[in-house]
Image 1 (tube, helix red, strand yellow):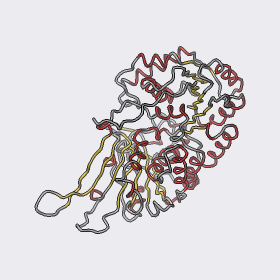
Image 2 (cartoon, rainbow, N blue to C red):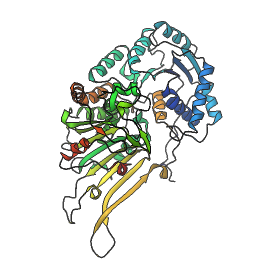
Image 3 (cartoon, rainbow, N blue to C red):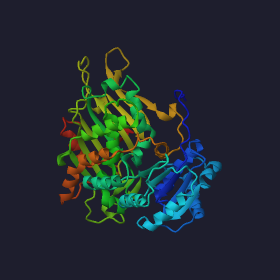
Image 4 (tube, rainbow, N blue to C red):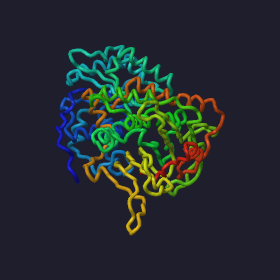
Length: 508
């Protein structure tokens, strides 16, 4: 295993009180607490850290600690959990557990915020507070306004007050604009940390290092040499008991304006003037604003039918518990995107995401144009193309596909691949992707967080499709579980000079 280049050891985050709204929710148990546990194990949290859980559920601190402890232990027995350590280090968890407190709080009752204010005056974290909103989107504006109304967002005596907000940030362009307006009326943009957890994943952060830290890649990372780009986020699971959420959301809203456009910005942005947060976010915002608004013909949707997945019989989406039988919610979305700038003019970006597909994979595949001068006979099929793939999940790394001379007396070329796997070069600890986000929020580093203009530009790009699908009376075409999606998605690419999706297994 290779060693990383020598770098300074990160200092512990400044002392603060972390207030988690939605403390008894799934996100807190599955992602936030494991991330805090990992940060504590890496000695990146200050001894003065305090964690206050705030939720309407009747609990006390002792009961909340016990629930979280049980959840962490359960992850050691679940290989499919996002956080799956071999064991829980009791000293590390004990360090976190003794800093946990709990407050029963109704998100809509202003009197309860006065109780929170009184609780925070007893803190020993220098007055620094982060309010983490791990709650339903409908409470975002209300919580921020109530915090401001009792003075909890005022920054005095050098102390910071920050608000971390989970997705979805709005459900369309009008609602995202309205939410931004509500929040920014009572807080400064610099206090707001809009989270896209994809950006916390190591392989995603690594895209900038890959591009801008290596002269090998950046000169060819443009339309002069790139034929097309495919961004894939495929899941083998269905809605898994989240039908009430998914019915209101669908695949496009759930994945594209945030996660997949975040991946698009990382792979397509121009080099920032420096690596400081605002320079990077300026380039990301510029890229998202350059996405041409989608036409309805640039989009395909689908809905999984009944069939077999991983050897088990599974119901159609419209037969899942909590789903309307006449539902028109899509479980699959594929889009053709165009970026109107000098670097990517004329290069199509194909984006797809769906549930109950053949493979679990998140990846970015860059297909290069053929050599300008063809000395050798061209080969047919995608296996003959030059493709560079960045694998985000499940096995982070890269794959380079090219043609090489086959052994023998004749100059005959055959397909070849070279592989790079992160875990073969760097030690990877079990993580959730939230470790970096929490640490950066505590340290005031906004680089991996979404700015208001980035959020709104992402929604603006997909709004015409959302409007078109909403007005349509058609049911999304069905696709077979365990497949690559509806055949209509294949036709979307075929119209582009006969292009084809890469097989899901090839991108994994």
